[in-house]
Length: 337
Image (cartoon, rainbow, N blue to C red; front, side):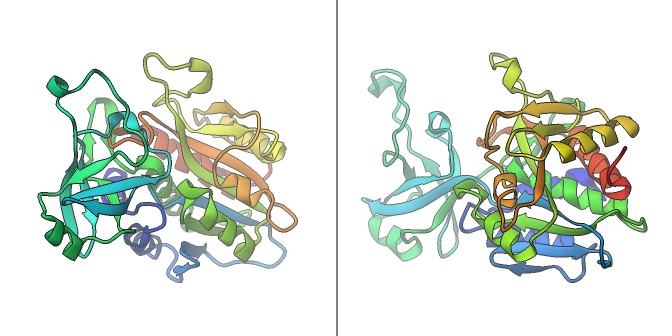
C-alpha cells in the first residue's frame, strides 16, 4: 500500500458534509480491496473484515468521510452566496480558490476587498461570503442551484520531513490509517470481529455515526480522527506533536479500560504515542457510539494535524503509519494484562 498516494487521492476527492458521495465511493473502492462485501448503507461506507465468529466481541473502526465546506444559499448579480458546512475558519476565506459542485464542477474564487478599499482587517460574517465564478446571473442560475456544495480547490503537496499538506486531511488521514490497519491484519487471527465504518456528516454533529452505531451495535468502537498538532503560538497543553505518534484519548465520556489497553499495546509494541485528555465529550464519533442502545466501550485514537479546517492542513506520514500499527496490534492482542 502506497500510503502517501492513498492519502492524496482521498484528500483530493471532494465530499463536503451532507454531500460526500464522491468521497464515499472512493473510500468504498479502496475498502473493497480488503473487505469485498463492503457497501454504502445509510450514507456510510461499511465493511466487515475477515470472517466474523460467534462469541467474539465486535469492534468498530470509524473514520469520517466528510469534510468542512460551504453550501450555496442564493445567487446575486452573478455572485454565489454561501454559508458554512461545519466549522470553517472564516479568517482565511477571502481570495481562496474553490470549486462549486453544481451541474458540473465550476472553479471560482472567494471575493476579497482590496486593502486600498478597506478600513483594516475584517473577518467575514456568515452570509457575507461571495464567490466569483466569472458568470453572469443567467449563466450562474443555469449551472448552480441553492443547496449545491462548495469545497476548497487545493492539491496535496509534500513538505520536508515526511509531511504532507492539503485539504480534507480531516479525516481522510483517518480513513488511510484504517485501510493500512487492515493491510497489516491480513492473514492474522484477531481478538475481535472487526467492522469498518467510513461515516457521513461528522462535521454536522456526528450524524452518520449515530446511524452506524444503531445498525451495527458494537461492543467496542474506536474513532480514528484528527486532533490539534502544536504550532508556534498555540497552547501546548491542548496539543500533540507531529511525528510523535497517535494521540490516545482519555475522557470521562470514553472507556478508560480501552484507553489503558491501547496504552499497554503501544508500550508492549514499542510504538510512540501521546495522551490526549478531554474533560467531557470528545466532539468525535466516539460520542455517538458510547451512548448507542446499551452503550459501547469507546475510545479515540487521533492523528496530530496542524491548521485544522483549512485548505493547508498538515499531517506527518509517520503518525499515520504508527496509528495503523497501534490499531492492528491491539486488534490482534486484545486485552493486555
